[in-house]
Image 1 (cartoon, rainbow, N blue to C red):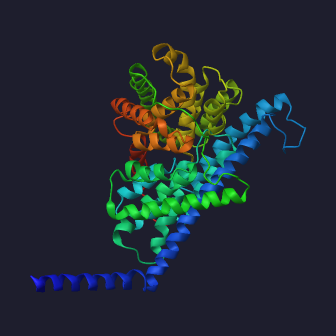
Image 2 (cartoon, rainbow, N blue to C red; image 1 turned 90 degrees about the vertical axis):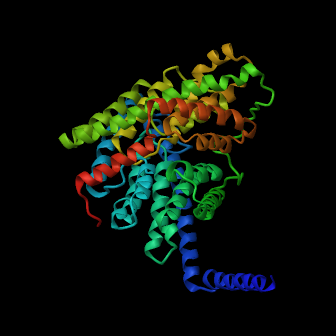
Image 3 (tube, rainbow, N blue to C red; image 1 turned 90 degrees about the horizontal axis):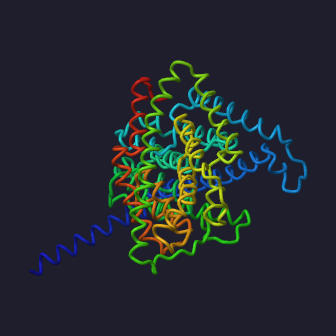
Length: 475
């Protein structure tokens, strides 16, 4: 008995010494750590830039509409007629320019960015991944998203954050040797999760999203890498925001929502089923329309690559005119106003916003769908408050809006855990965790009845199919 124990002890000591040598006293290991640190920090830096660019874009478009001056102190406003016409011209021509630049110089940047990260994971390690993850694509994604944010497109910034983060984390594997499991999946998953987390200051949701949606599986040997990447990116964003003068280092994306489901009665708990069904079916219908519409736009682009963008941009301009400018932009200001301030928008706001998000997504320009979907969900929740008050009286109105935001959002992306957790992290409403998870699960099941393949998976397949159809070669 003594000899086997001594052998086991000796083996453990040898293994410990080997780990110290390979992970601590190895110059190559420190090269890997340094590159990993820089890539994660760059992911956070890009997420901060996208946030800043969105703020600038909102102010710029408010100026074009005559709602604000060129500066905060400026008293001059755009004339009323110009405030209607100029935004419509900018968004129409902006769509044409972005789609032309994308197709001529930045192929591979199309779409939200999350389908491209999924497509990269579906592709074996090799030269073909350079068509999805490269410096050219990262630069193009940053440039084209910036143009979209300043052109009033109804797009979010989380998808491009995911794509750029995945690019950064994958590209460091070209600079030095990394373990095979990290090259194959771990670093791409880490970069993608960090993009979500840094965009919304939601590290838990970012980690979950990396497994639930991008990876579609849990891999224990990659978990540590994903968590470290997510945390580093979030820390970088917070530090940069503090340098800008932000007082709260643990900021909430929307703000603190004091809603509590602890005192609900049985009837009020039944609202979870109702809200989940309504939001899930509507979100699933929207996702299916986007998948079908994306294929149609690809077909029409082959027929005429100039008229198609103008038609899409013109549709966005028309929606902006009908909504008095409320459909321009990501939708974050409107969602924040509905949820946090109780601002009432017209009943048609969620319908028009969903339409603007639809045209922006099917165009294939770089831009995400998180913010627009949450904004549509907030508008839907506001419209449904009287109905919910009648059927399930006594529920806090902010709780109703939050549940509709999660239900619709889950219906669109079919990632229930991510959708529930990200809302908790964005509002600090931890006492709403169970209702939000409940509506997310119901919403997912209802959406899945309409849209059998999730929107990101379907768009990833379309993206891979386009690469095969074009017969592209790595550059």
